Amino acid sequence: MHALTLIAFIGSVFSPYYAWARRRLGDAGAAAESHCAVNLSLYRRAPGAAGFQRRWAMTERGAPDLARDAARLQIGPSRLAWQPDGSLCIDIDEWTSPWPKRLRGRVQVLPGALPGRAFALDGGAHHHWQPISPGSRVAVDFDAPHLHWTGDAYLDANHGSRPLAQDFRSWQWQRSALPGGHARVLYEVQPRHGDERALALAIDAEGGIRAQPVPPWQALPGSAWGVARSSRGAQAPQLIATLESGPFYCRSLLRDASDGTLAVHESLSLQRFQQPWVQAMLPFRMPRRTGRPAGA
Image (cartoon, rainbow, N blue to C red):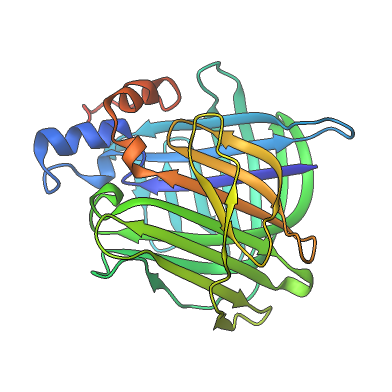
């Protein structure tokens, strides 16, 4: 089994350097363009193996390393570009951390239907999430490491006008791939003030989005770092694997108890992220490479 997660950041929301710059310069003085990154996680589980092998990279870069227009985003040596045929071509040239290994190759995303709808995650509409193409295909062609495979894919985007920790304590997110290009998405946020907000969406192969009744809350085992995990469903899902586990973030693979579908799940604790001991640890996993000082 192979899988990957790729995130391109302008204003890296999990960057300790960006957090330090905001404390020093204020939100208005800390430019998002000075804190960019391409985060790539590659996963492989050999037949019969209990866990996944992983390669992970997230090097932060500054404004001189950023170039973008309507069709292209360049962050350091890696680039995302929309092609004339409608596909998204992603050329990766990164190094893992803390132990350096090369990550170099191409990811080609072939979008399916485009719903064209975004959702506010908070009452003040400071933070938005958009499922760009929940039912896509992907082709992976890497020479470092040597990987060639195709599979189902999911494409979305988040954007906001202020730091996540200013408005949220935590969130739980989950996406299930269903037969025929359909998808099921659960998004639950715990605001710093007010009641929790939850979305339960069914997205069909034509891009139609239907809001569903939010299923009952179901507990999941906490992560090795003690990050709380939970899901929504008629029954508690099976925890298949923990793909990423850190002091404030956890990515998991679940199996639905009712229909057996697989789901990618993430848990985020922004209260943990703001702890000084967590901020001090992050540069070992998120190095910064730029000719311009952080926050400049």
